[in-house]
Image (cartoon, rainbow, N blue to C red; front, side):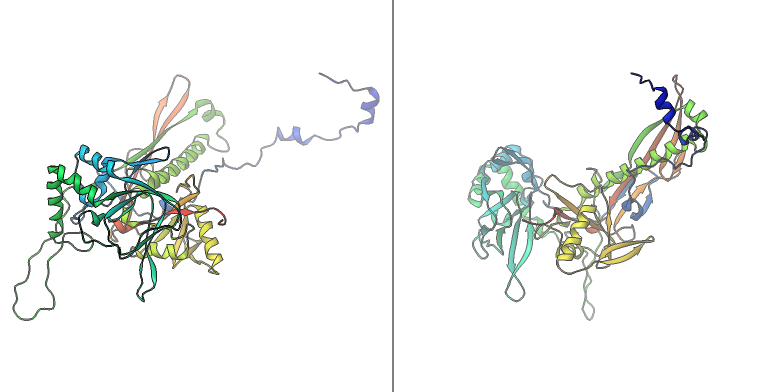
Length: 470
């Protein structure tokens, strides 16, 4: 709808005496930035990992032989308020590792009785006879033992998927070495020695398996479960020295390079006519590579095959003592490995660390790292990584690691020298121009990560990052 202006109104408006800025911009060359992108982060993990050339596309981690018995976590299924252990998951128990008779495992699972507990409830008493195993479906439980001077001390924190009392199933004289106290509400399943014994008497296969299991401790091992190297020390005179060799794993773990790919498409008209002052293909490629590197870091953290969160050993995962990340929790995380090089945490978890420090009147150190001032604890930098997930219950994880082949740590895997290489282990390959006059480039990155020995990575799990506590 047009509005006519009366001659009187036109006379009242001041006459334009110079060119308007809106019109002038049509003829001016603006000063402009390169295309910007919010997704780009510091990507500290990619910077800190030493990258190892993987020429064959596969990296094999040879380790000293370890006699592995069950050390994994147990999973459950929930139907309403009813919880049931998955029968095959009972194979994570040391005495059932390798036992595959599903019918017998199902019978054992059927004997597990559900028990709901509340925060503050004492589940077992130190010194009392132990006649059952407890499988934790949900919740946090403190194991309280006797300290050096006779006082109570928390010797362990258990959470979802953990268990306690496993030795009670075969040892009739077993007693509890600690008091187990519920820190939160939760649910566990209990299997008594008597119920387990009834199933054993009905299953010759299980009897044979347990007899074989009982012979495992006779194999000479060190405290880490590795095949022992026999030696003698402190002797005098001419004594017969023991002979030894270092046994290796027969089936070592192999890591294949993973891949991330995308096809970058640019119309020839854009590349021909709009390439000044900035090269359009170059800018498109720059942002695509940045997105690919972000995905690479995400995979190194979260991929189920090689990601650090999923491949950290279960005995290197610990629980917070009270929920938020305290200095004591970080100290316990550091105490489980040598030569820790850096923590890795979500920015919100780092903020939670700061709040806990402030509440105790502590102030973290700062270290200089690649020209940046980084907060640190015990001289170990705490680096941000927004790829570490935040769970629905407002909890996250904090990782700590050492790196390098020479230090038996974590390494990144890649392969340089690939065809059409644009960056190390990243190629940009021209795929031609289609019938719609669109130029296609295949952008590919190859990468993986390997944990050389289990204690190279530690994880503090179920870290509460919410503000304040009720």
